[in-house]
Image 1 (tube, helix red, strand yellow):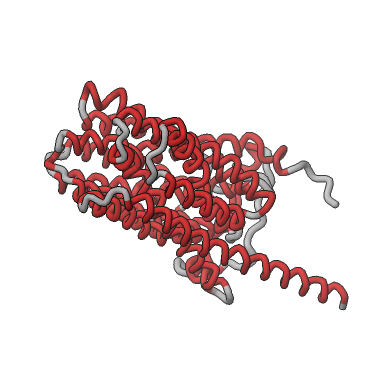
Image 2: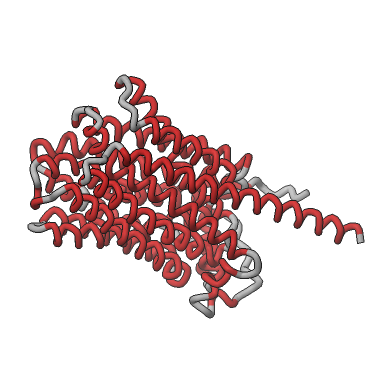
Length: 442
């Protein structure tokens, strides 16, 4: 066996720099994503912009539609121009779009701002995941992605406190002005974030990659034997459907649809639905904090478990537990019990979806990784569009108590699809091992 230093020892400074900057970018992503759900009860209470519950659901879907567009295009663009440039552009876009929301004088202008913000938000997340996956120590890919995604939920926690501390004295517009502040982070990201070494090598920019690797004392990745991905912009996407990959790809997409329906439906409507269950606004925002604290804990637990037992298997189990927790929220329980259920639901829900991304990212070629993650995220965004819209329609029809049931069913569907993907993957691994044994015997 090789006596080379361990990946953890060799990756050191470069991994810390790349993951740290990506973590901050995703923190701002989470703040911008969750801020709408956090201030929504206040906007509805004061009828801001003449907003009605069904319009509120539509606005939530505008942002997630933008995320769909961003996710579908960002992966291919990142695999062509680089992860770094795209991340910088995405942070700038969703920060400026929040300023448009803050200045909006009508529902239409506000919706445009949320759509543009969604494009930036949708493009950032799969790109950051791909970057972190590039720099993760071998065998710790799921944990590294889980650690990155704790930032998303830290941003959700921050959004709740912005709603509590800024909206009451200054109004809902101040919350969106607060979300413009990440624009100050853009020059730091542009100057300090290293480009993906795998991307540089795949694009033939070996001198640049060698200089970066030498500066941080890490090994240079091996160039891919197949160079066709660099010559054809659609090759990375076509690779997702070659041979028997198409079935696995569709299973990931379907699981992502249900998972993001659940994530964004709950993220948008949790405070409002909990108020409908009889809790006051302060308690409803406390649910947002607990939900995202659970998400942070869940990312770390799921990441470690996935590196040991497999990300698809953990994702399926987590979705089953999520469905149970979400359904329980439709039952009015003592406040302490409800707090516990919200926290545990956050533990399982958020990391269940992230482990789908981890599964796709870890199993993808470095030169097409952003495309694979981006399209899995992008196809799932159809569910993210549908989730907030569905919650708004149920609330407008005075059937808000059905919202938790609908979201629980989405969790069960994702459990089924990712579970089938896990079983197929296990069978394929077993078959591959058996073939290797036969080849060795001959």
